[in-house]
Length: 312
Image (cartoon, rainbow, N blue to C red; front, side, top):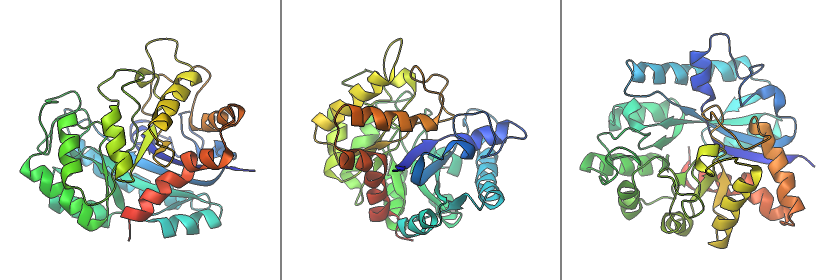
């Protein structure tokens, strides 16, 4: 039986932009079309990323959106751009990967509702309100972490709700997180975040944050980056510890996957890319997790949230 997989975060578009000659197929990174044979159905959210502290970040983001469209056209026999669950179902029925598009940091949209609407028209269906940099909408987990949503941030989130876009709270300040939860009318996602109770890092979520996302029927994607999993000598067992903690909080319908592929410079021992989710799937079965639960974690939880938010 094939393994279902819906991964909430990879930075492969940035790698394509910065590594001439690289494509979705045949690269040497952590995400590659040639190594996805274990997974079906399969979906992936591709992040558009650029560090706003560097020159030309907004232009780099625009180039990645264009690259996403070009790559999906170039490999149209394997991958299909999607904006909602119905399109994802169509893609997977045809044996293709359902590809969604996100923007990692609203500063790449000038924190502008006008540019948010343009991104929506270009197919973007998720936005991280911040990356690591604080911006006009909010502080981040590591810059101005005490600062929550501005009025501009409130308006941005409200417009995302209206359009049917996933508000992604990974990287956001905790103050900003709680402001989002106070005003959102739709489920939110933390596309690539682990448990702060298991390993303290500002990028990870407190139990209270996880529970709030759970109560709003959102999802949290387990991040494979070793730096968010443990202190040293990180193994797949550390990833399992984060999962088990989230499940102990009641998160059987909340946990998803968000590997942060091509955004990681260190992975658990023995892992080299997204294909290792197949190993993690088998590890969970070996630990006597019911297969229906594992399939929810690997695919259905995130797709349910996409269906609830992304209508068109």
